[in-house]
Image (cartoon, rainbow, N blue to C red):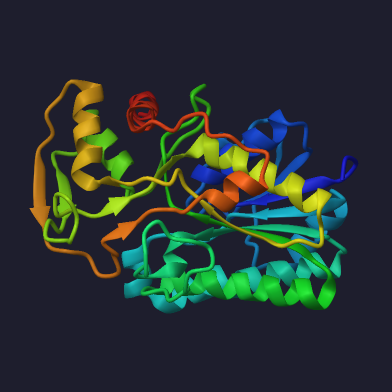
Length: 328
């Protein structure tokens, strides 16, 4: 692997750009494919080649595999907004599932042996228990989660049939920004709570909506497990190293800190960090939102050479606000 490259799909996006930074920090040669539909070219370091293409374009992808002697794929390209997936399900099956099918096929055709996939806690749907274990039932309640679960199944089958070493990281709620200010959430419409709070702190939106305050939680608002994006990026590096070291063992790992915070607790952190009061308005529930999603992360801690560095809600929120203030 030392003489071949890692292809990061969606490497100009929020999480992808942090993964690129982490891989380069650990000495991995990287090339990025991104169609820039939501990603930003400026989030990719100048020393990293960015190929503007869709992962569904098999010819373009295979050309990159061969030109850069790609030995591993870290696949983050895709659509991620739950309400949009409910409104436009076929778009999500096309962009997440079918595009991934093309990418996996291209990888196998070009002899790529290692494949790490960006999955989601949405594959669990309404959890049967909290924290959620990787062996718990996967019953997604929205097309976003279903589209990701289908890719996990394709990878498992490709691994069994073709010897592809694969892993899937099931993200919980990713937030924050690079502590060195090199990347963060930018562009497009904001759908993540921490960024929405940061925008409100920075005067870029007048109020923050809380979607439902009648859930069966401590304060009636949804509870989520928030993981700092830089810790998640480091988990990708550790997972890739594990796939290379132990290619016969698929990885299926929850990525979270193992504790949750409610919507109101996150907004209170934003007020605490910024010293400002936010205009918070309660609206109706959104379709497809489970009440509580918290990761059981024992397998992550036991399997990978990884330790969280930023497991602190105030730090996550502060990094997001600092990044938001740097944007136009």
